[in-house]
Structures are given as C-alpha cells and as structure tokens.
Length: 315
Image (tube, rainbow, N blue to C red; front, side):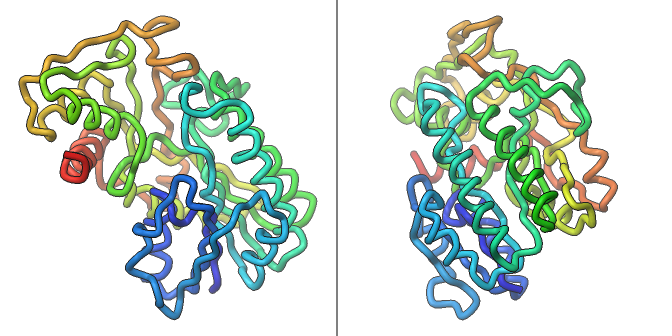
C-alpha cells in the first residue's frame, strides 16, 4: 500500500511514518519543513519504501504529484500553534483551511480511497460535558486554531460525501513525546534553561487537560482507520487529565530544578493561560476503545516521559 503523509517530517507525522514504513508500507511524505525537520526522518533516508517531497500543500500541482499512486493519505500538516501570539488569523486560514482545501481537490481527482485527518479537541470549545463525547454540540471553538480545524472537518465531510472516498477525523487531545518542539513541556523546559530558579506558569494553575503520549496516538490513528463509515469521527486522548500546576512540578523535577519557585500569572478570562485557551478538557474515549484500542500511558506518565526527553534535548 502506498500512503501519503502530509506534515510527515513533523512531530506526530514522523512517528506515524516510522510505524507505516516499519509495517512494510510504501510511504511518501510531503512537508514544507516550516515546523518539521528532516532529522525526524533521517533513519529512512535511502530506504526503498520511503520518498520525501519537499513542498507546500498550497501549491495545487505539488499536492497532485505527491498524491499520485497513493491509496491513503494521512493529513497531519497544519500550523500547530493555539496561542494567538504565535499564529494569527491568516496563518490558520492558509496553513490549515486553504491547505486542506488544496489537498481535497487533489484527492477528488485521484485514486485515493481514504483520508485520515488530525483534527483537535479545541473544536469543542468550552464543552459543558466532561468527558466530552463525539456527539457533543453545538461546537463553538474559542480559538482561531479550533475554528480552523472545525472548518477543515466540514470540508472533509462534504468532499468525502460528494466524491465517494472515505474519511476518518480524529479530535486529538494534547499529544506529547519525543520530537515535540512546542507546547507546555517544551515551554517550561525553555524557561528553566533561562532561569533554573524560577518557573512562570501562565494562568491560575488550575487549567486541567488530557495529554496523550505520541506512541498511543499513532496506535489510535491506525486503529480508527479501519472504520467502514463514509465519514467517521473519533476522539483520541487519554482517560484522565492533569493540571498545569502539576505539569510544572513534574517538569521542574525532570529538569533537575526541584527547588525552582513556581509563580502564577493569574491569566485571563477566569484563569486561562491566554485568550482562547480551553481551561478544562477531557475526551470521552468509549468509541475508539470499542475498536480494541487502549492507551498505555495516562496523562501524568505521558508528561513525565516527555519532560525527561525534552530536558535531555534542551538542557
């Protein structure tokens, strides 16, 4: 089977590529390397089952060429930043929505039979039900990132229904692990590198969310892809959550700074870390669990393993 992975040089995408190549698939990666790195794919350089295309999905011709001969596509490419200070409206529109449209145009004129899309739990916004099931609604995102992911979901659903290919949409919790280069653990380690005696936490510290280790994420992506529905949606996360204050303490220890003073900024809008930050998030995992998938790590374990890895890389 030939598989295209967009964003395959990125954090989650590269781990997915590892698994797909190891299982004997012919894997083609399309990545513009804006946030990904060829170092993540170095072990497959020259491998007979691996191809790398450097290019941008916004280029329709590149999208068509990358998809040629592929029966499945994992669409992992996106601007991953949730904070508005790190990515603005145009970033999310072009890199998430417009890039997805370009890919879908290529898919509908290709022989691809299945599209797997990495969406986000942020599409739920401030969900009134925790853990949040896939059928929760209405979906009211509170960040530009969440809004762009929901727009992508709608486009994918419409294209799959209109043009006859299958689509599986995953609403991901916060995915962590080796090769990650952004997010709360990365930020905390960076702060401790600058000042090992102090660790600033954005918000009031009570923000509580689920974290999923990247190997568990990849297992889920592969499992749900077996769905027989025209369009199917799965939550993909852990069965628990952890507060940002607890994360700070875990990272502090992993970085060898157990006595660093933790300070809280107080945050915005009732203690959020930033405008658009979902304060509480936990996904209902019963649907994906019914396929036989189960995470091997809970949120605390995922954070601890990631903190140890990032500390080795950054300190």
